[in-house]
Amino acid sequence: MDPNRPILCVTPNPSIDRTWVVPGFAAGCVWRAQDVSAQCGGKGVNVARVLGRLGRQAIAAGPVGGHTGRHATDLAALEGLKTAWTWTTAETRTCAIIVNPETGDATVVNEPGPMLSPADWDRLIDDAAAAAGDCAAIAISGSLPRGVAPDAVARLIEAIRDRCSDVYVDTSGDALVKAVASRPLAIKVNGDEVGALTGVPCASHAEAVAAAMMLRRQGIALAAVTLGVGGAVLVDAAGAWTATAPSIDVVNPIGSGDAFLAALIAARLDGLPPGACLRQAIAAGTANALAATGGDLRREDVEQLARETVVNAVTESSTA
Image (cartoon, rainbow, N blue to C red; front, side, top):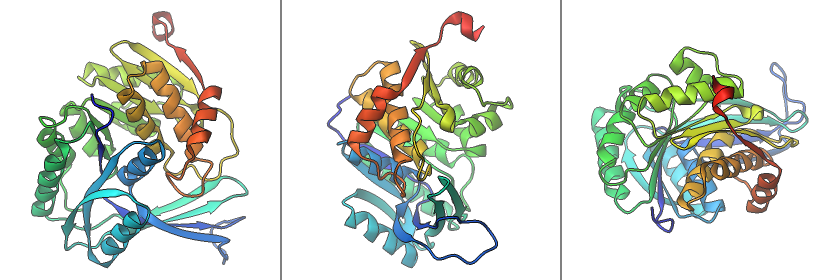
């Protein structure tokens, strides 16, 4: 793996993310926002944004269209993101995020996304495959837009794998089921997503390790499961590790899973051992929660939080 080559970050369902900071927010009332921001969004875009903060080259890709799509791509250009968009006639979605700084809670309303045609998705696959050959790794992150079959992510994996074998996937539902069957290098999911996939509750480190090992038995080389404030686990051929996140005053947790994935990819490209990769990933996910908008972390916060993150190797007796 060449760490100097870019990472292609594919978002199947990009958006404009509008964030309102509203102290004391609760449903059913009239509020005035303390601060408002808008940025090009979607999970893969967040991954690309964080990679840039960590000093990595990244390319954001995905289907965009309509007035909202033009606005989203303009916002991406303004912040300096390198991009490889696939243009469609379907209007890109807008997502609303309301942050209550008094509690650290975030309320999110995600539009379902545009209705894409099979031809739109085929063009995205072609565009992503064309870009993949120059990349060190590929991240496919997020939900599918309407009109796209559940096997769409699997088809994308199969199209790009010959050009770049290091494919990381973060999705959910039927798309996750199909993606696992296509055997990308790595799956990164949260506890709810892997619980739905396996049919087994996943809230503790032990449960997350067991779920990740199930993914390994299905042909996934590396499986990572995030548990929010409960930390995360990582399982690969060398073993299993758990991590406990440092305690912070949360501002906005949205995008922390994306920051986790970005730092995990960057650490693996640096050749760090698995436990150290998990440490960096947890530190980035935690640092992300210190900012009001997704992916707007500071590298110095990641470095400090990495020193405070507790990582433990899992012994065979603890998984018996």
